[in-house]
Length: 112
Length: 116
Image 1 (cartoon, rainbow over the protein chains, first blue to last red):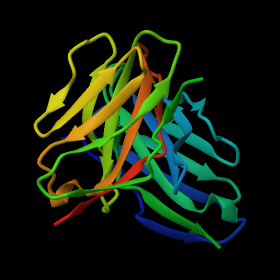
Image 2: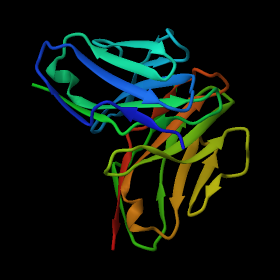
Image 3: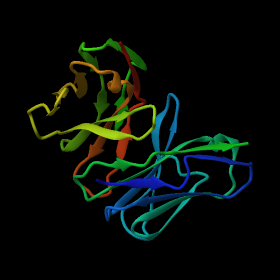
């Protein structure tokens, strides 16, 4: 089975801190994605990557950056966390153009 | 831009009954995929069912089936013989095809509760 893991289930950070969210997949998937999920808004794509060192902006990239140095790992970075970045963050991966996306368990981030 | 609309935020169904969750989408593409994802309270999102737009036959997976109406841009999910474990948030999603890096567009989701 495909396994997508995220480094933390719950995280509490202070405003202005630099925050790293890590995602690892074990199925050699080319594509990896970061979403945030907020009540009433569904899932919104922040960034995605279709190859090592490649990245593309999603619908809401402002305030975020990403890093993909290895195929299995995709990191989301909040350079200076703000309270409006309090959310659930979901990572996903997929193989090729026909495959569905597989999701990690999510990280509930609270910025105080 | 593609949009996905789930107009009902919540639904409830009696155990063992059938329920239909609605989804509409807007696209100018002719080739695309549609998905229903389930997110139980534990938060791990899992795929329930997928439909390729070029296929006329509606997809089915055990108790889950879809009613895909391409002309009407409608993609509803039917859950038969509802079980307590079906209680979750359900998201409808669209993806343009082909393309390895084409992204998913999600609806806002619907919370389904199952009454014992």
